[in-house]
Image (cartoon, rainbow, N blue to C red; front, top):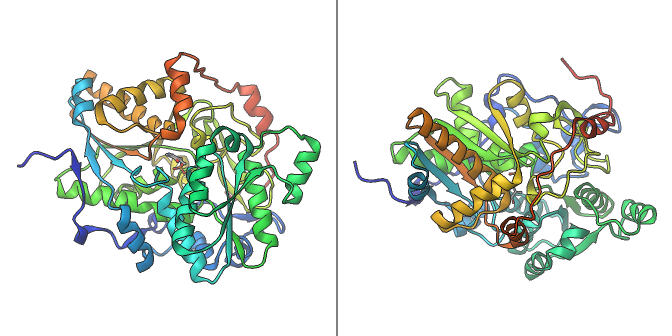
Length: 458
Ligand SMILES: *Cc1c(COP(=O)(O)O)cnc(C)c1O
């Protein structure tokens, strides 16, 4: 057999033309979304004021296994996809492990992350429905950048509520979004009633993701022809991200490989849900049994220490409630450098799969994450995003375990993006100023106490 190359790109005729919907193969479904206005399961129509129709449909569709990717979306995917499947030969050698390490690299676009995969789909469906503008929020900036790029391509105006602290600390992120014509507003702002309320109570606040989401949702629901779009957590986003896993599985198949372990970082769960999708299908249908591992920050451990409960997806409490692993929507994680992983909840699909024992979760402290990031960048010529470095840490730990046991396992992990806008974090690590804050049980309990009371349907 020929040697497996460092980088492998799927040939054009093998590129997936459909997304895969994991729910179609799940024996038990995630609990339904609850409409907070009626306290009853939300219907597709309940979602129309917030999401565009096709996306509301995808959100609720738990039966269609494969969904065609519309031609205009595939055309834009072609600009930066397929993404490479890379064999980490150098990393394997440096670790002295018998394991084979593969990673799928999603950072080859301006947003520097996988988020563009769903941004394109969401911008396209909005345009197709004749909507005239979109709103969203961004914390670390990757989602805002991805959506700005997609909206500019499809010609739909976008307003981004950017958490004030990021707006001030990451001015170049703002400039990238402005390059794609997005209107950027630091949140909290005086453009919404929730923003004005927060500002009057606390004029010096640096903002939070929850507050930015609330402002974006309020503007979308009060502006004609405007809708809100979200970059993670939702079922529709996991569906769009399945392109990552479908390409990975096909590429490995062509190379004669299949992973024993699939590892990804978990913030709201979208890249992980996308990467594992076709492998989870094999597990759900009994075809294969790879281990699936989520890696989350110890500072924001929604799966490893959260509760499986109904909670609001945002602090504004206007979006539907979902049953998920959550630290409580009032939980404010300590300032961790992996901004994209600082979300209180977890995708309801992944939460259900984790609850039912189909996957594992581990939490890691950020200094060990950056140790892995620095090692990786020297060996693999990619400077990883701090979020992605959680998956690298997970893969390295797995490979080191193989070294002890002598098992030649095949590891696949998701390298979600690049970290060029995170150099403050890298310098904190290199100058030994990085701290590892782990919330206490009391802090978590204080947040659990504020969870909404909903009878769970069991
Ligand atoms: C947003 C982001 C994540 C985490 O989001 P998920 O929805 O959990 O995938 C991970 N990596 C990068 C680079 C990101 O931008």
